[in-house]
Image (cartoon, one colour):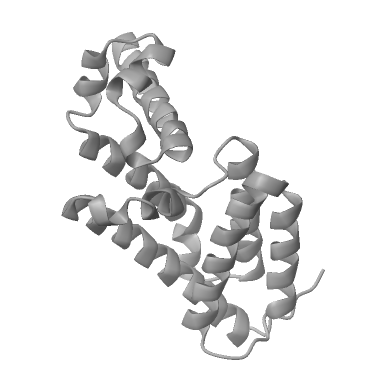
Length: 195
């Protein structure tokens, strides 16, 4: 049992280190040796968990996708208030920036998108479709329940919010998280819930 716990811990450390390197250098700017050195493990340990770099990148996407699903499953199944869902997105984004993940995984992969394998593109696209589906539902429910007031269709509003947040994360990396807070406030204004 201890071995499984250590293996899971090593796997998570590998994912965290890979994500950090991908943000710093891009997808093609790091190797397994760049991961193994700082972690004090052999390359074989990385290959044990992720036989190929594509497997590692798919695991990064999967980790982000599972986080989305875990935090939105109840709302997607049963509905509820929309504003806490939107505020949860803001809190999650701010937390990611504060813990060293200033650029979202989708944005980091976009740099090398043309060089991604088809299976990585498919996993990334599926994650983005689920993200957009969830936020579209948040916009629909928020409007139907009178929590949000905005012009246009809910899907287009969701797309614009995701794009604004992705751009704000890049700006926050350079200028600080105050940029994120300003964008969050603008989104609140755009949907009629200024705080």
